[in-house]
Length: 455
Image 1 (cartoon, rainbow, N blue to C red):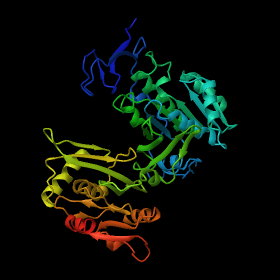
Image 2 (cartoon, one colour):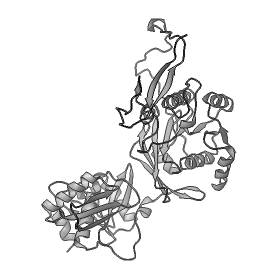
Image 3 (cartoon, rainbow, N blue to C red):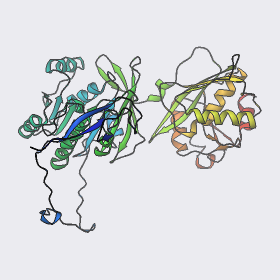
Image 4 (cartoon, rainbow, N blue to C red):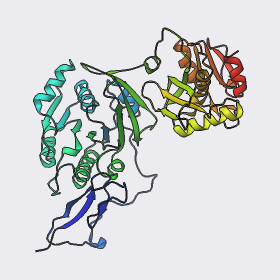
């Protein structure tokens, strides 16, 4: 009798090795390798490609008939935005996030609001009674939402064949177990095999499948890295469990943009959509404070006005500190060097702390001008009016560079009641000043900016 073929898999990243090793060469984690059975047949058989019955023939790309199937539009506009306009037929969507962040709440809420679609919610973590209790708290019931508590994929597909749902939700993929793999649930082999089975089902039947996934302590999706390559869309549900706001961010999308995000507010009755996130990202203050500025950023097609907070103080102990939350630390170092070299501010002996309010992570370079104004405001201890915002990039020579989508940024600032907006001089040509009520102030260099705001 042939011996079963086994291998060792890293439980953090999915790296496989023929023998056990202490440290993973891929993710550098210690003691993460677990032995798993990858082949349980007594005899391996090889099939020549000449003997294979070819089911399909190659076609010229001009002969392929493409049918533009309509997307399923949900009542959740934030989810529609991050998916690229709705749920695509036959798509496989993976949603990851920290424990307790609200992944199950979000998907159950979607399942309960799709009244015209038969939704099968497969749960391997909670009982039927627990899901019923959560549904009652959401104050929404649906006659077309069905609950199945099962972890064996063979049983799940047998129920799917009889039930014929329009949408399937699996909570979570780490609890599923396939009969083709002998290792336990949550292992690398099981996660990969179960995902492959759901992917095959989605593509053959055209049924959208949502998979809820766990994440590791580093914040990446648990299981093999190939899991993210197999699915069509990867959504990341982010936020602090101690605050009420959640961000649904697109990490990968074969059917839309990867720069979109949706914002929710966690309440006692579920997740509430935040249609105007700029209002919650800008805090209301009774007294003016130095170091506070408002910058304009773009997330996909959505303009956001966010609040930047900085604190510049004398470093009394050793090397000056540089700390940033939500903003690239290397870019902060670059802007500080520009201010010292081009602006004459002695920031090399100062402690600098920068924070993006609301828990956002900003990658848009258009926020540079707001960061510079915030740093100088804190350094000079002079506050800026609350009705002023900024949208421009800063170069190494101290020049103020143009940014894209300036019309959308100006429109968002005008809608929120701002009176002045500082932009690059090279962006002013594309704006019709007669149609905007907000005062547009074009600047070409940082010296010109400081003369305008601190005169």
